[in-house]
Amino acid sequence: MKQAIFQRAEQLLGSDNMERIALQRVIIFGIGGVGSWCAEALVRTGVRKLTIVDFDVVDVTNINRQLMATTETVGQIKVDTLKKRLLTINPEAEITAIQNTFCESTANTFDISSYDYIIDAIDSLKDKALLILMACQTKSRFYSSMGAALKTDATRVCVDEFWKVKGDPLARALRNHFKKEQHFPKRKFKCVYSDEPIQAQKDKSKGSLVQITAVFGMTLASLLIQDICNHQT
Picture 1 (cartoon, rainbow, N blue to C red):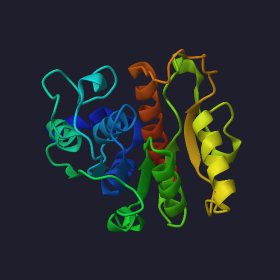
Picture 2 (picture 1 turned 180 degrees about the horizontal axis):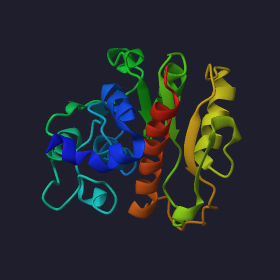
Picture 3 (picture 1 turned 90 degrees about the horizontal axis):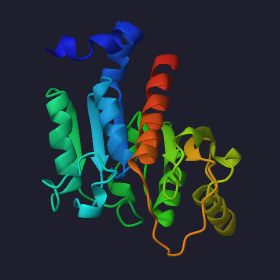
Picture 4 (picture 1 turned 90 degrees about the vertical axis):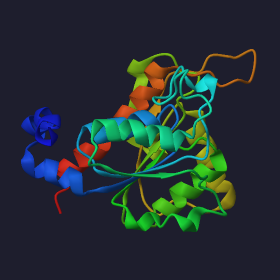
């Protein structure tokens, strides 16, 4: 069964690349509307060593966009629920589920430099900025998701280097944060974002749709798989 699971991927990517994919250590911070889909795509493409990090439990409001959120999983720990699903895809995968928040008080407990790939799908501006700064000090490959909320057009999702991202309020807020603190990422990194203009909202809620968040997550996974296949060192 193991060979059959990844047969179509291997036909496209080749056996050597599939072996490389299986060896990479990947960590995803935030497994909500973006991170959960990224995790699933990676496991379905052969990533075996995956760590998922999130502090939260499944809420009924997550059902419209988060992979592991259903009416049957409300109240369950997100990382544990997603891990259970991922293992039904590949029972031989090594999924580490960490129920915690990446923040100033916990950041050093994660040993992020030990991972080959770091994926940021964090919502909190302060915590996201910290992860960006720390990830960019490592030799790990790093990808970050910008804001997927308040978007409706999946065709506007795109990729660019962080300082070149346009039309994304979260990227703008992060850049302002770095400038204010006079503390900048040590290297360039790619971001997934949408340049779709945000419509004026009558309230401050951050509405979001699965057809946007899932595309963000799948695009992050695509960047990582492409990099493994192209970055053969």
